[in-house]
Image (cartoon, rainbow, N blue to C red; front, side, top):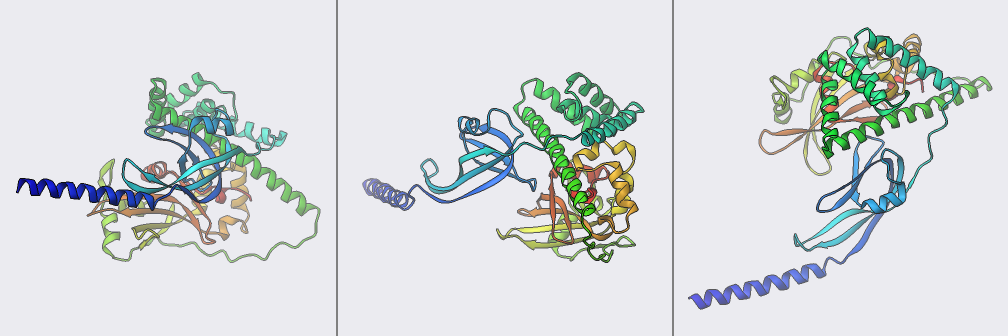
Length: 407
């Protein structure tokens, strides 16, 4: 019997080897597809393999195989620049795992045009907002203190000054501001060589720089449109029906088990309340709806959608203490006052909803897979999941960028 068993083992090994060879021969290395994306270059990370990450305009991150030498040749050594990347979807045999794999590889890239030069009007508006934020910070407003600290930290709008940045962030943290406390921890970790914290700081720099750049471009577009309106006699478009706002708060759900699983679940950092309570009772929505569906990958998704109380949000954000924070939302306190005063503005015409999606896992487990905003015209703005959930949990104000601008 011993010899029979040995013989069988040899036959099995020979058969497996032949099958492997046959499988590998059916997986030749080749390019299946290619494409081009635009976004913010976040850098290259290396482990077993090296990959580059590009932050897309919708907030999602796109990773592809690349090395530092290739990306430095295309973009230079810095991160945070707006870039265009051409990639190839390649098929190849994964020898270690013994399977046919497909992945995106960096093919080429280039830096996109620099933002338009800042005009005297831009500089004046920025200086005014910074001055108001400075006054609010000196009066002890933690939100303004954190915002001012971040501006000094990144050098956007003010000369970069790490000492002043830490001073203002510490003042906000001392008042219990969680974002300030987390930022201080990140700064200390980065100073001690923590690569994840250093990466997070790079992303913070690029996010603020991108927001300022977009604000300048948008302001230039608004000025161009105003000039065109002043030099033509074209009639304005018909007034749209306001609609979209709800009086009393209501919460609807389909009653299915997936929705109930999420609503009765808990956030990882606080088990004293449920996910349903946190979202349904967010102070800046007027109604809420829960539903579930399957995505393209046949995964079960539960969705919360809350109608934003847009007038309340604009009134809150038009206070001077938010002037600096509005820079990253492509707006200003003056802009919000104009929107509130004009009954034909987008505040009264286009309804935006807060959207949170959860991916159902095995058993009763789930994870947050998407957070952002969606309006009744189908436009969307994705947001960072952790930051969005913290804002909702703390019942702080947040809004889509497109809602807050004059454009």
